[in-house]
Amino acid sequence: MSRTEYLEKLIHWICLPTARERCCYLRTHRELLGDEFEPFFSELSALWDDDPCEQRRVHEHRTLFAEVRARGGTSQAIHEVYVNLYGGLTLVESARLYELLPTPDEFVGARLSERVRTVVTLKLCKALQYAYTMPFCPPEVIAELHYQSGYMFALAQDYLSLGTLKCAVAYYEAALQVYTRARYPMQYEKVLLARDAAASRVQPWVHTESVRKQA
Image 1 (cartoon, one colour):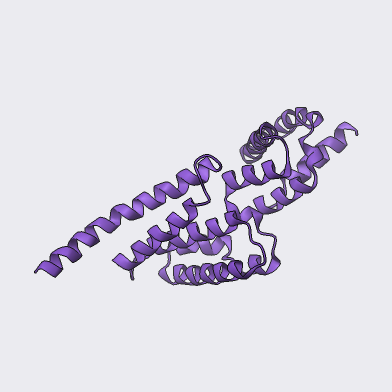
Image 2 (tube, rainbow, N blue to C red):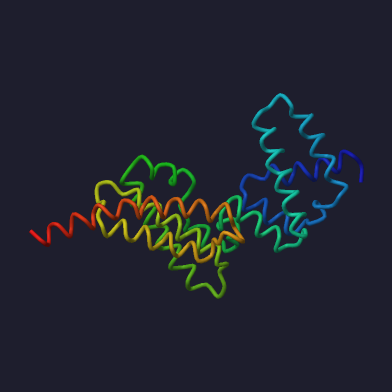
């Protein structure tokens, strides 16, 4: 291949709009992991040296490229590295399940609006229900749905209660069954921090309930 062809192939991969699409593309084009592609990350970095966003994109994919190769360059290695970096939803292949998921804008809005948070929580519930009925759904997908559900319960303000906090902790615990420290260290730390934060908020509620019962 010519220099231009190498660059075009690399650019096509790293410029796909979502991590899910980039993961799927790399799994079906594993030739991109060949030694001959490695020098072209430096070329891309030089071509985009005046654009900080593109510089970050190149650095991120160069790191991902190295990590996948370090794990053997297999389809399983691609799967594990993408999940570790971006979460289990990168493995969603079912069009129907993808349609059920909240949009990125809805996830952002859920942090600002109780109404949007409720909508997102319901969508995650439906997505989980559908995932459980599928002939096969990657456990990492379900783990991320558990994490996102826990996060929504922990965000509750108008309806915050001991019950919602316990639900959040339970969802996080379920996610940690898949996101283990050994296999997905970044996801493990993300969920563990969220679990511990939610659990720390449970204790005052438990104490208050105990005092109320004794009164």
